[in-house]
Image (cartoon, rainbow, N blue to C red):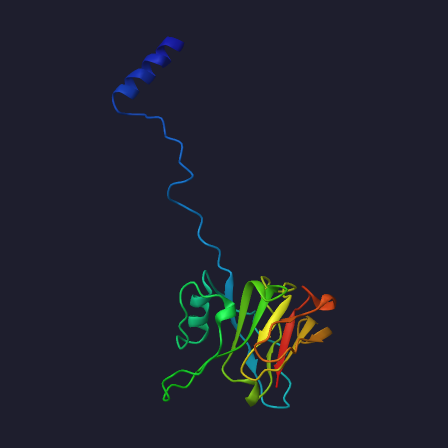
Length: 199
């Protein structure tokens, strides 16, 4: 029986039938895609004095491999950064063309680690804090209980980070001034579930 199987293998191999598959080389092709670590989510603007809505559909995240791609998306193409730009290089400058009005503003960037490091969550709004309070009553599961530091822009001087969704539970105001890096602090580190921005 062994001789018959050996002969069959020899015949099949010699006829170009069965071949031994080569082991794939882990260094060639099919490399793992780069991790998308720069995300964008829209916040909800409300009239001055009006409470933000407490019920919203789940936060829709758009994530990108580079910060430059994320900012281009967040600003509807108005801000173009070099491909290797970092979050430290972002300043929400008005467009150079006087007839171009931004339709979407970057009001904050939330960070995974202290010192404004790690993955980023770029917060956009159709208005600025000068026009009213802005809120994100819930975060996506990927960002819930993750935030450790933040920067604010567009006149949003107060950045209230809440422990629970719908602006409930413990709260800390990360108000280090516009565009300055502000650590959330030990009490609320990695505990943010909703955020509200005001002037």
